[in-house]
Length: 230
Image 1 (cartoon, rainbow, N blue to C red):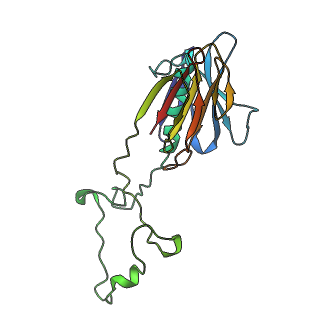
Image 2: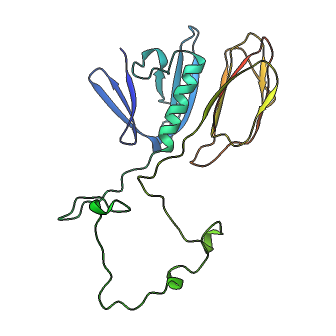
Image 3: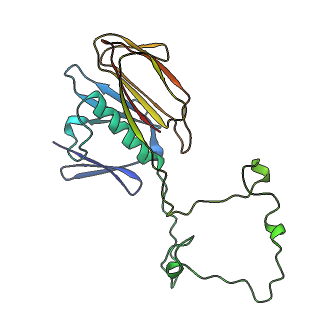
């Protein structure tokens, strides 16, 4: 039976026939690509509580609604990158319903905002009393905390794909990098052997984290397919 996998209400939603399942991203511990003896690929999702005892297995050949999640080493890595991005944007709603007012709190257009006023007998509030330290890059005890508007446009990440047949280095600053040995000879990633058919992925984790440089070696027969998000 085919399944559909989507990001819905900041949760991983899986639909199989008449069965609908939701998984909170906060419960996920790790994402891993695997392949079996038949050459079928899958994403293994391990959870914090039931780590490796009861993993969720998403077989690429069963997923019908994600066109790029094909049943190959490249496809399974694309699936992992997509789910990782969904997890990075896990920002639960902060909407609050107030009696007589249903619009969200926070920074919104004037027509949908809740107006507030200072008391008519409020004493003067100097700016220096509210902001005692300079804005900008400063130590945490001498900074003014700010938040980004919840309707702020996200930062676009640039995907790149490289088929390497010689040694090189993925420069530092990437959000995630995946390597798949699609050749017939051994290649290396960070001086560790990557055998034919094996894949490995690196993810910087939290938002704004980036990876350091990653050295690799490849050859005409130990070909590396490299996917990076920068």
